[in-house]
Length: 355
Image 1 (cartoon, one colour):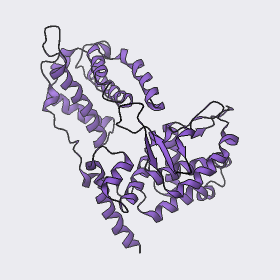
Image 2: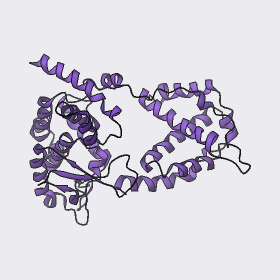
Image 3: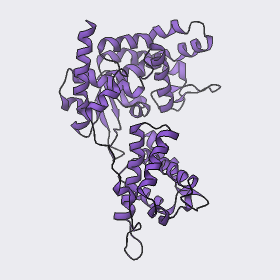
Image 4: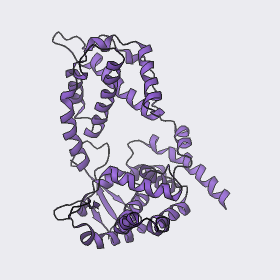
């Protein structure tokens, strides 16, 4: 099992006792089919929902763990609408975040009303209010493209400009900040290697975080990763990266020992925590913050580490067919990959405008 899934499985087991018994049963029912990381998000969604019910007086339970099935059965469509407004206006969740939270609730309510049974073989939940709720989770490529507009690197020219900025341009913007300059000089080679690897392969941030030194072959330009959606924890795939990532990765490996002192750490990408002598595996959050720092200074504040993957995919799709793109990105369906067809059309028109 990869590092992130292993850590999330531990967090999941720690959180389970804080849930009502029937939610615990649901999580255990789903554990063989969904990753611990996904189920941990489910648990967080349920915590938000239960706390909302208590704050609105929809439950007499002294704590979320004692929320009863009867209280779920009494919920009305109007109350679910009120919860949707709460997510939008109070938590300021965007549409995709709201839809995801509602989808996790629908999955729970479906299990309680259609699958789980009591001792007499009757459904645990007699009335499912979430069955009446319509969500909009179906993939809409045009909508996704409109959301990505201006938030990815549009073409190979802009990709090269961003790489140059991470490699040296950022230095000029922090010339008067001694602390920022210190950390930039310490981590510049590592940061460039991470950004270049994603832009040369389309790897997910979780896949990059999980990489160990033994997982990369610079000669063959291959990294071996656990892919999202693969349930067997021992199944890994070899993913090619472009030639342009080879030198930055080689430069990083040359300073790996001297800069980060890995000791017994096997991780490929390390961070040296302040006050500590040995490097530790760089976290997903640290990688996300690193890319956001450079992107904001570069003038693309909405460019995230995941949108680096979108930037790669758009560029890759312009040179390959949809099936090669699907495999390279690790999509389970070409339906997901089809968004890059529309992104490619928009990118080509923008490139023509710049000429």
